[in-house]
Image 1 (cartoon, rainbow over the protein chains, first blue to last red):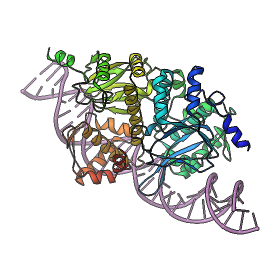
Image 2: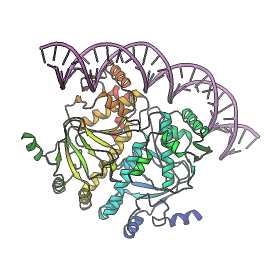
Image 3: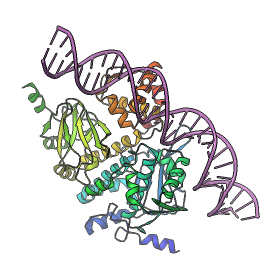
Image 4: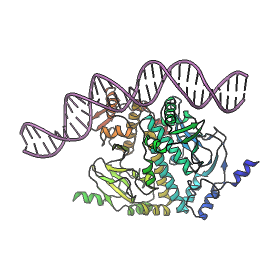
Length: 243
Length: 243
DNA sequence: CGAGCGCTTGATCAGCATCAACTCAAGTGG
DNA sequence: CCACTTGAGTTGATGCTGATCAAGCGCTCG
């Protein structure tokens, strides 16, 4: 039972993405209290649901490894993807206020999630100001991230902003610097961006033929990040300057 | 000095929008501590800036009366509006994490703002769990609101979602039920929605001629809210069911 | 090995941006 | 007090971006 053994070993102390998650910048006492809270670890297979829309919010989830998509179904039965989550990301924050999930979330690949019981977590934040401040920072960053994606108007802007966003996030996670694995389908991405997937594919083709990116199967390599950024709407240099 | 007298009287106890703001659901002790924090009240004239992009975040602001727009300037010098704020709304949350403003904010009319010193507020949340929980709920609601606006794909969907959003928010503030005052220009709205203002104007014309809304100067009256909702993307009935 | 899903590509068409001209109301200054 | 300016809103003509339709390709997995 290799898998079980690995799961038992999971803790914020050893998590490779803890610098992005709640545990970042905590002293060891706060970190171990946080760890004590996250006893349940889930390991849903590819395509499995983490929760469904309208279910009560009992837990938040932190992605330990793998990735998830967040979506709802519109009146015509279309899936509308609202977010992708990667290691270190926190899932469910936007639904805290009404304690019912506003979206469904399912995994894009084999995924390991840390289960964070919401009520206990809220209590923990009351006794540990450092955790509270960290959580507020995470919420603030989520707002920034959510807003940035929607800024582009043309399809090309949106695609380039998305690719820049993914690249930036993957670099923060210090994955294989230039080889970026995209776990979602092109259909998922175009859906997320609100454009037709044929259009998305066409723009990818252009970017490839202009040597801006290289793409094989689901692995992307950014060849000219300056060009990629300039074809998008978001000024990532500016964003970096804020930090 | 009528104005000064009015401003001195401002407090969460008497604020007509406190049920939407931080003060909601607080016991009177927490509420008065919060009140003690909000000693500075600003009254910027129409078009005045509350803060500029990239400035340090010293305060959050709560709208007491009036309204604001949030925006940034893109590389071509175009104003890109990212949000509108009305009484009870909290301004600046998304910029907490890097302590520099990600956007500029200016007023759309004569406006009264409550100044909330950020550091002191973070301290206050540590000693008052009820305030912390309330703030987290507000952040969660802001995420919901931000995400809903961008969901529409076609221009008509976006316009109808926007009008529904404004209507809903105004009803929460229990303003003159059916006469809704839009403080921003049509250009501001179309900019916010990412569509041309001629297109926006055209869609308004259609909605007017179909007796879905009535519009004179900047005052709107929704005649057929069911039709308005059905032409948008967001299911407001569903959203209500979550509460 | 065959079925099916995800990706690729091209042809056609509609929705919306762009350009342009005009109205109307509110200042502004001589 | 009127001529001029300015900005917001209105309307129509034109063209491009990107959606839709259609068909073929090539993985991957049962």
